[in-house]
Image 1 (cartoon, rainbow, N blue to C red):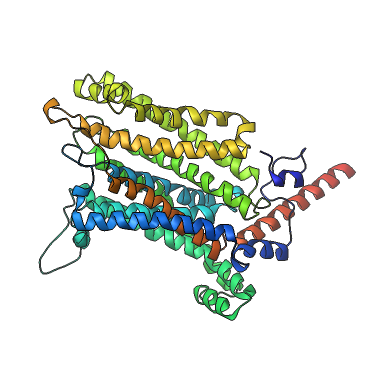
Image 2: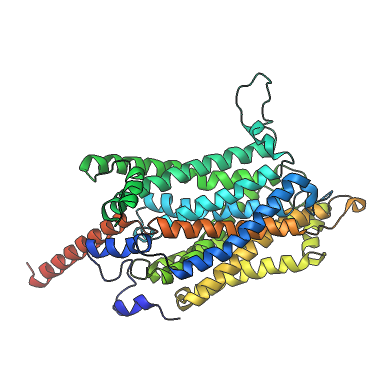
Length: 471
């Protein structure tokens, strides 16, 4: 598939991070058009379709609250199934936003500029979806506040030896820092919307959330300091949050779970699925919103490289799991992995291998990394594979443990399917609302990037002229 922005770039030059170098006024007009312009019919149609899925999700949640978790297909020994599988999948998807925004900012990578807000919003909505599942999994979700260590006369304190409070602290911390980081980056652009909005109502609304931003030197000084501090605070969360999630399994004695490779393996898988989801959402949004000039093939190419690198890490994790199961000599552990290959859930295991091991290998080829159709299909398959991986780890390991007399198959009910696909639709609705009412590209950062590129080119041109004249 041919990229429209490719025609604007010189084919003899490296792929740029900003095509055409538009001026400040042109950038402001183009990047605020999706927000301040008229609502598109395609947006209305898509959000209407997704709202049907939101209704299905709501029905599934209400059924869970009224009937209890007996409405799910969970049983003994498969007490964790679609609920925790989807929880781990969503929390993993939320890792790409912090990685792109915080870590690449600290390393001063210019290609993060046009995609950081996109990934940050995805992180927030993914964490919101993930946070629902541990609560409804409680059985009595109306008592979820018992997990908070607040002083009370009843002296009801969380059991910090349980994995459940760990998840609560991890998700709440990650969501808080991610929201503050995302909103702080929005403030200059909210002020731009306030100053350019065509109606008084929009100017008032955007002005309230801009917090009186005027773009003075003092404002920018405090903004830079705060933004870097938030990036430094958010960077350790990339490692810590999914490490804590992996402890839910690694601290147990269950074959297939009790392994020390889970923390780095889960973190790599989270970044793997997170970048794949960014590609899944960014490619169609880039085309529909006309963002080819600021989201170039350089951005997509670099993200495909990250998917390839983290995919190789995940593949290494798979290999080490099986190697240690054989090398350790524990027959229960060896059977747990043999069961994944030959047991009743084997097709899901082979889907996992195909999507997570074989599919990313096409990104070794630059032509595949710059083909939009290949990028989109591969990113979708990666997320399918990562959900399958979580299901294999959780449900398949539980279905056959130590004693054959306690084995049982898990079959999802319509409520399980509703909670899975309904969460996807709810995530989609939140993301469409973000695309419609907030600038998806950080306007101020793109303008700053253009000035840096112009300054760099001017310096290079001056150096070249001086070298040509000679001493």
